[in-house]
Length: 366
Image 1: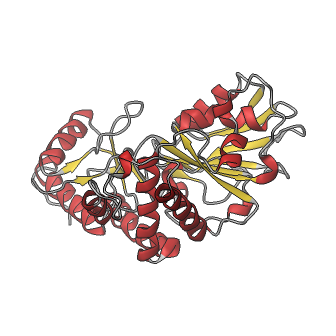
Image 2: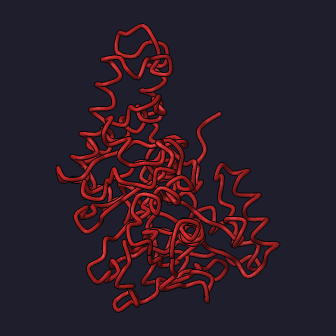
Image 3: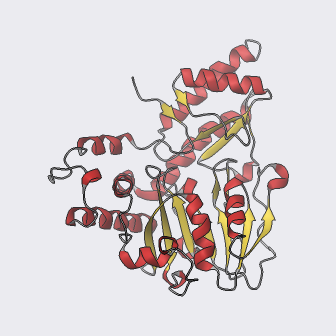
């Protein structure tokens, strides 16, 4: 069977070149006579893998020396706890609620201190980014928290909020490495890798050194302290070794593509193909305010749940998989991550036009 076009929001499509390289090395990595899956994380061979992965990520993102790169088991839900556990000094965090994941992070943080929602777009089903130019940031806030790109709802912060001098913490899971980002504007950037970087089970946190504290509440578990990872090179315990290896391969692939400026251009071209069609279609339409549209996640609907369901079913049969929208909102969603080729988006739009013909009384869309 040929490979399908996988529009999943995560776990998501990975570069075919990377998968082929990993397959070729499955039984014997670089002459070691074993798979990376079998390799000791204390070995010289693995140390080189994790060191190169970190350096390639630093190169791609221009990460300054005063930021640590931490490879942490688990995904977003672990970070929802780690952020307040590690950053609460005065015990206050301000959250901007632009989707399900920011909301979950806020709810988790309330267990550890005074987490406040200072802005929200829930009033219109998270279909826009609220004005963040003059927020009621608490004078005692230890940080302001955002989800930079909202996977479920397809919105993104094109302009960062005015935090009034407070450290900005951002979940970048869905837009990780999709375009250049000025790391210095953030105290912490973290992302679950399963959307745009690698296999599920790993998060990467980029943390400014002064935010890595040793004097935490003694009840904070050792594996939930950023200092544990920073002080051990992310090797305090057995890390998700194969996931890190796969992410490292993706980093090298991104370098070969021309880096993040090149990826941004490609991602803008891919997104424009789908958005331009949605804006002209008589059958399908997007659900997000145009000014806040994401390049990575594109939700869309018809005016009929029955047609939505039929479209998802027929699309899957045609080789366009995982287009069903998140269970909380329904409809459809196409995730256009780095590894999705432009040809896949063009093929999807062609299929949507064909689908539209019989469902618009036989009138084909141009």
